[in-house]
Length: 272
Image (cartoon, rainbow, N blue to C red; front, side, top):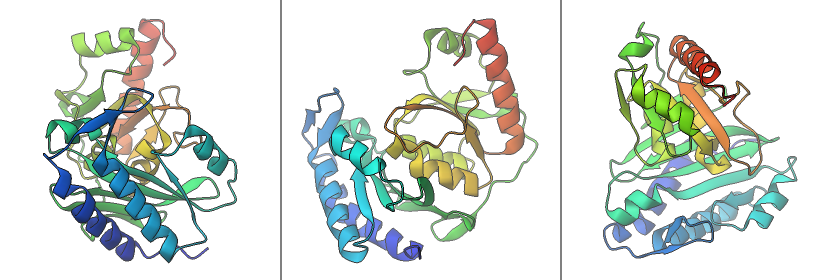
């Protein structure tokens, strides 16, 4: 299929976020979904606007969103021959609801069950990160590619979400961190995008959903990074089950990070 124009998509996402997300920031009330996660009016408004505009422009591409029911999501994923948008309309809803300016829109296009195009837009800083498979990553329209500067793992910034890790692994990381310092920003999409641009160096997450990693993993790979699961499997799978994430901004750092995790998983008796 002929892919949608990435520039047109970037403009569409920017305009939608300007109209639906930012006017509601710091003027928000939130409800809780059945799984306990937060849902705001901005999530729903952004979801509805992008679904309407994407389907008006590309009616042959189906639409999957975090805000759909699991049954509807599963039905869409059961048809891998159908091109499919995969949207998180507001990644970092807890930050958004608390007034913390760290959230993003994440949009991927899946073809034959794999991401071929991805966009992450940060409406607070007005930054857009994007990639087309095989054509590289971009940051605000400029080519974005990480180079291996020889940085060792012990000199890196680790972006680690402790909440979803096995307690034994989290304890080892807290007691004997292999990196220089650690961050967690509360938005998977921004963590992927920032890793791709060298704002962090290694990353670990215990369980991301499809819409958390579909766009971000493509952007990181096209920027020269690498990713896998804790078990060493390829990360991407067009399924609803959460996937653990191990990633780094360069192949050399990825190898060091994987080796450290493998050694320490063995040391605490876990498989990851």
